[in-house]
Every structure is written in structure tokens, then in C-alpha cells.
Length: 434
Image (cartoon, rainbow, N blue to C red):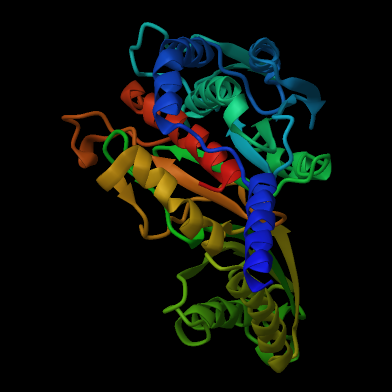
């Protein structure tokens, strides 16, 4: 009887494993598919580079993306957050939902690369003509994600679950408007179907050699917030300060007090933090103590809890220093980008995928950077991971490298294949649990 029970349990377990088992990705086929699509990726990149479009005006880019995705068999949704495009690939088998993101917008920069496909695009802003350029590498992002889309479509029979491709407008943002990622999230891009994990890459940022993949778990790119402080006192003659309340002196105390937040109240062994006062205005005459002084500055942080703490401490410091002198301080914040947070569990799980693609050229614990990215909005809602793709051409010293946003920014197209393989591998491995 005991032997019969053991045999029954073994058969039942085998059947359950067969039901729950996911397909296995043949990485050799994945790499071959990436190599086949590379010429198209180069062509897409050069065409997009020659025709840059500003935030929320990416109509031509969206047309290209939507047309190509439909040819590959994706279900396409357009007009998300104005010009965003979503591509959905349902494998027909149950499983998780993985999202990959590329940003599409360019910058008002006059290109100086001398490339045969350099941008000559101009747009009118007010009474002036403004030159446009893909000076941040978003043309490469779009082209590589289209390449990864082709690879994943070719491997559809080896995948389970759903691939969601997010082609996002306006990462660079528009003054006084919500940026692209924020609006995509509000439009429901992470729902229907609900995204289980999201990946993205960014070319450049640091002058790493072509094909290098660099990242870190937890806070990777800084959160950026702007603060505004209005110190209100009571105006009086400069010779009789006791008859008023001097907001200039109070403002000076606040400037120094804000620095104490970083040097004495923040645990910098956990994550860096920077508070900078960038403007300070008050008064009209040398012999008049004014009624009001205004100042503004920025707060950079790399950890969500630290960010919340810094905002609270800036408010507390300003209000209480003013109160101690009989003045008042009105503190307000303009939220910028949140901390780009690489989920530590997801990052650890997916590092083998990146190592398979780039081997020793994966730098898995690089220092955080004080630049910011609106990819952070996705990471606030779902486990997410962003990594950098090195595009510094061979023979170019880091000191001579023209960085992102430079009119001479000229990323090495030799990195495109690594980018396609990385995105496709992350999606395929996440879906199959490899």
C-alpha cells in the first residue's frame, strides 16, 4: 500500500509540474533574432535622429512606432498621454506581464555632430526658430525597443504571459506641465493588464565604454524637488532695526540652517543628499529693512524615505528659525522627479540576464548619479529596474566625451545590439522565470 501511494504521489507531482512549467527561452535563438533585426534598428535610429520632435509633439515618431508594431503582430493603442504608444503582445499562455519603456522626445539643441543624418529640424517658438536634436539619445531608445519588440514577437512561441511596450512622450518635460511618465501612469498604462515588472535603459549619462551595462539596486538616480520660501518680517528704517523684524537676517539663518540638515541631521552613510539655495531676493534700498525676502533652491535625494525626511526638515527649519525671530516663513515645494528606485529583489533576480548579455561589462553597483529620470514614476507603482548602456566610442577618452544634452553628443551605434539583446532578454527571462 505504501509503495502504491508513493507512486501515485510521484505521478500527481509530475502532472502538476507539467501544468505549471513555463516555456524555456532558447537564448541562442534570441541572440540570432537580435542580430537579424540590427540593420533595421540602425535605420530606425538614423531616421528618428534626423527628424526629432519635442515633448508631446512626437507625432511622426508615434506613426513609425505604431506602424512597425502592427507589422510585428502587436495590439497597438495610440494617443496615450497625447502621443504615447502602447504595444501589447499576448503569448496565449498564462503568465506575468512585463513592460519595457522607451522615451521618444528630443531637445531644443542645435546639433554640431556633423553626421550625415544630423538633424536640420526647426520649430517656431514665439517669434524665434528653435533647432531640435536628439541630444539625450531617445532616438536610440526607441530604435532598440522596436528591435526588442521584433525579437520577442519572433520568440512568441517560447514565452508565457504578456509583453507590454511603452513608448512614452515628454521625458524631458514641459515647463509647468506634468511630464510624460506621470501622465502615462495616470492614463492607466500600468493596468489592463496589470504590469508585474518594468524595465528601461538609458544611453550615456556616464562615459562608460560602448556596450557596458551599469546599474545599482535601490536609489540609482536622484529625486529632485524645488523649494520656495517667503520670509515675512516688518519693514523699518535700517538705523532702527528694533522697530521692525528683519527678514534678511532670518533668511541668512535659514540658508545656514538648511545646510545643517545635510551635515548633521541626515545619515549620509545610507544615501547622499544635497540641499542648494539657488536664489535669494529682498530689499530695495541699503537703508531700509524690507518686509519680505524670498529664496528658492533644490533638494536632491536617492532614497524615498530620505526624501520625505528632507522635505519635512526644510519646512521645520525655515518655519522655526523665522518664529524664533518674530518673523514667519511660508514654505512650498514643487515636486520634480522622484528617486529612480531599482527594486532590490527584482534587480538581484535579473542580473544574470544582463551578465549573459554583457559578461564582465556589467557594473552592478555603480555610484548613484545626481541626474533625474521620470522612469521613477513607474517605479513608484510597480517593481522596476533602469540601467545605463555605455555608448562612449572606442578611442575616445572619458574627458573628451560629449555627454547627453551636448550639441556634440554622438553615441556609438555599436551599442545598439547590446541594448536590443538586454531588453529582449530581460523580458523573456522574466516571463519564463529563467
